[in-house]
Image 1: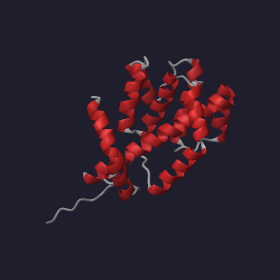
Image 2: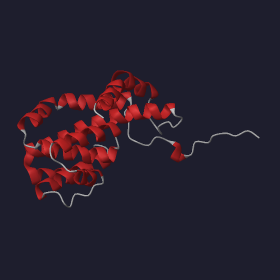
Image 3: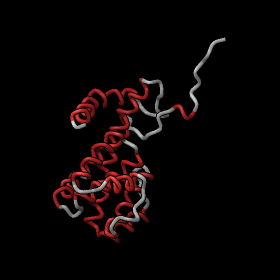
Image 4: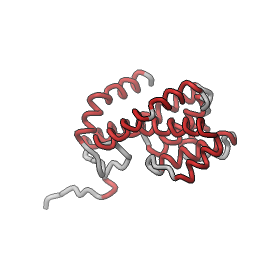
Length: 193
């Protein structure tokens, strides 16, 4: 009797990843927002610590191991505790300052909606923080999502090599990201352990 491996639904790599098409779409979005990206980083309307908290919330949902590692270290260097980092990654915001709460809730919604936040949530964000700071928060969500999906694309490539393919995705794109960026992620993580 021969044995045959059957791919059950739980045998797939399930994290969100990029394809060439979705990557190009996000590159175009970033190019269209480059003025706001520069402004968000220069203005410091969103503190570095809050921006790291936002990035950890989005990363916790998208589950990028590279981004989680990197942004955990960045947040620790800014004075965030491991207890706070665990809370951000598990979407427990009740102990965070009131002036951060809505930004963290928005970051969660942004990631859970795959970068398509509802008008209602955008309105809440802008009402709480104003147009410029609200836009900065959205920019930080966009940027970390891009990093998450690139990191997950590298993880998907390794997962394919181990016999667990993504449900959807592009092996060609995953391989390309691995060739051009994977070794940088790997070298960075190994150098900083």
